[in-house]
Length: 125
Image (tube, rainbow, N blue to C red; front, side, top):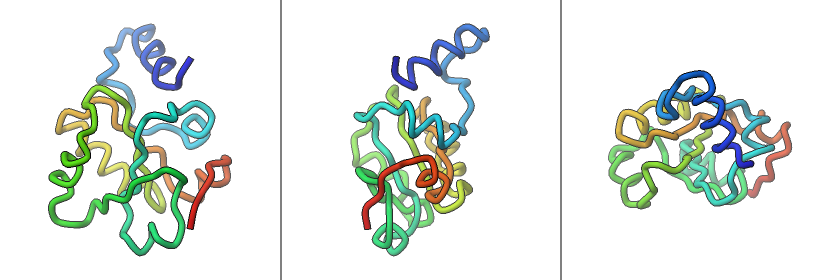
């Protein structure tokens, strides 16, 4: 069962709709159960991304003007999970809440890069 399916099931069993799932997802849960097809967005600066990033991640700097327009250009499915991370989890938390407010009901903040690496997430530099 995919991580998303488990979260949806957990939400329904708790009497909540999937759209009210927590925004934050523990790095361990992300690494162990994410859907490989779901997009992973690194919301740090281009320089931070170039130094080291999660394998398969796309860079979309939350601090740049036009963040939402650039996100929409990616053509992501509003109903599918989107995973976001940054250096510490602060920017990605902000980005996840912003995505949720704009219709991405399953945007998840998966924390900071170093935590993800400690949990076994592969990286590129």
